[in-house]
Image (cartoon, rainbow, N blue to C red; front, top):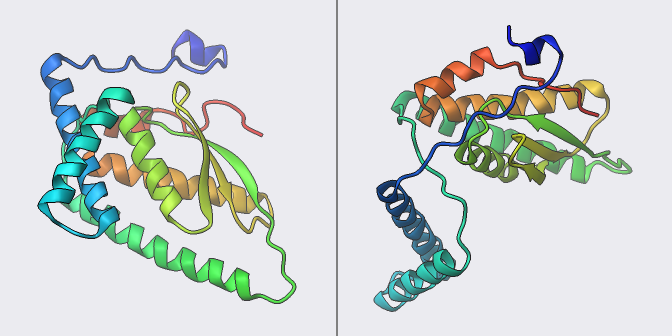
Length: 203
């Protein structure tokens, strides 16, 4: 047990990986590919003009609005990736049915709450993927992301008691667990079991 744990203080975040020039160029190429793909999806038309425009706009975004480097240092596991996809579809369907039932219930006013969820793997990639999947599921919405502390502040719908808050935190941590098991490194997978879920007390 470290001195920080013994004193009840949160452990400092692990050092962020240093990205070399080759790795940075590779990450920029991947980011450009995603930007072009999003541009084509927004237009809904695959043509040489849209492709060229997407490349130009993507390069401009990367030059004038540079993002922190998000490096993939893990390994893709097809079985865990399939589990992630299937459970996401299941969560999407069940949450949609629940939100629809709340919306059509006569005279019912659902209560919402904002909860802070500390992730166990505090890399930029894990923060981004977990936040994106959570936001795609109806009834949950990312309000803020604390990159340094690895915290997600999430608005949840239809909160009736403390057990609903606990259940929402467990579901978010389950999403993180499936993501890390699908594409995380071996060290990140081990961190799921070695780091405590609640590193501090949250309101």
